[in-house]
Length: 92
Image (cartoon, rainbow, N blue to C red; front, side):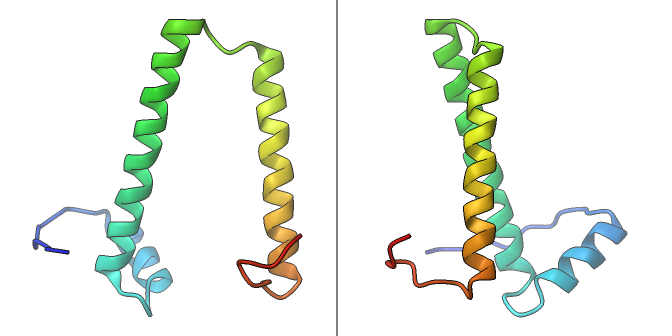
């Protein structure tokens, strides 16, 4: 994949935190991953807006159910991490 060098301005304390966290993979890889994640979130928000235009806003009950599912997924991820990081293909 082609790359291009750019200059960005980041608050110094944030940069220090990122450098410490990104140590092995490098700052550029960390920033690229963060930008991909942010772009994905923006695209999901755009989809939500389109769906709400077509089908109406999400109800409080639907939102609560979705948040509960996300909490369950987070708990499962944490459980897998605590169990020694199972192989990706391993069944639950």
